[in-house]
Structure formats: structure tokens, C-alpha cells
Image 1 (cartoon, helix red, strand yellow):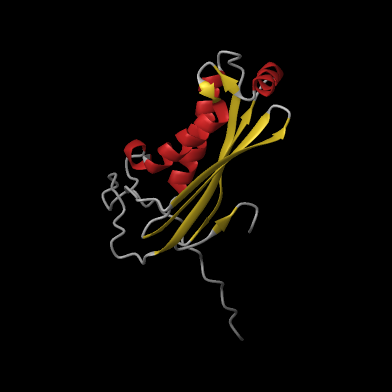
Image 2 (spheres, one colour; image 1 turned 30 degrees about the vertical axis):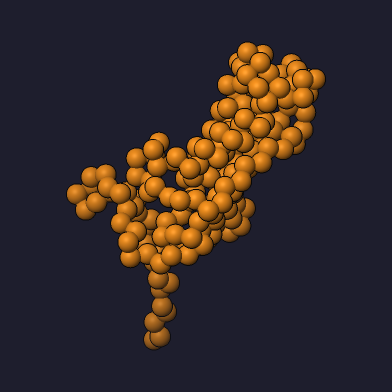
Length: 171
């Protein structure tokens, strides 16, 4: 009687920021290969009608200044300083960081942050931080008009250059 081979079991994913004693630790990336690492993240900002109309009428300027331009600068600054906010992120000299803000419907903005580096570790956290802080900056600059501004979802859209690539929607 012939035996049928069982498919190999996939190993369960493990957390990378804990050591053998289950204590928090920074990942040692010293032996990893230097490759081009790219990540794209997005954050959505939903503005109440009154806020969207006020920003449209004012050319997206408030007493605090140009809302979208300020959010772009804040997003880039945040991406560059991610390691100061997230305890186990490595400090990285980013080679590229681009933040864009596009209206996708009345009162809905999509912020995208794309980050790239030739390095030993990915830049997903930098992209997510950049998109998040840009969204928070829009909230801060427009909250005088309404506190009913919503942020979310914030999500990774794609990453490449590490152990495995990821693209949202791709399986």
C-alpha cells in the first residue's frame, strides 16, 4: 500500500521583538543583506461637511496656516523620527520620503506616505508614522471648525525588499 505524503506544515509566525526569555528586545539586523526597502502606507481623513466646505472656501488655509502643506511637512518629519517614537525601530537615514494628500470625495482625504532606503531593515513603520502624523496634523489644524473629524483606517498598502514582499489585496 502506497503512503501519501502529508503537506509540510507551515510554521506559525513568531514575534520578532522578544527574546528567548520573552523579554522585549531590538531585532539584530547586522547579518541581514542590504537591499532596497520600500513601503507605502495610507491614512484616510473624513471631514464633516462644514469643515470640507470651509477648507475649500479658504483654499485649505486656517489661522494656523496652509493645512495640506503643513501636514505634508509634518508627515515627512515624523517618518524621519519614527525611531524616537516606536521603541524598537532602528534609526534610519531615509533616502526618500514622499507624502501626498488627495481628495477622493467631498470631505474625504487620502494621505499616502512612501518611504525608501537601501538598508537591512524595512521602512513600514516609517511610512505608517508619516501617514498617521500627516492625518493628525490635518485634525489639529481643522479642529477649531469641528471635532467630528475622523481618522482611519491607517494601513500598510505595500512593502518590498525584505524577506517577503506585501501588497494589500494580493494573496
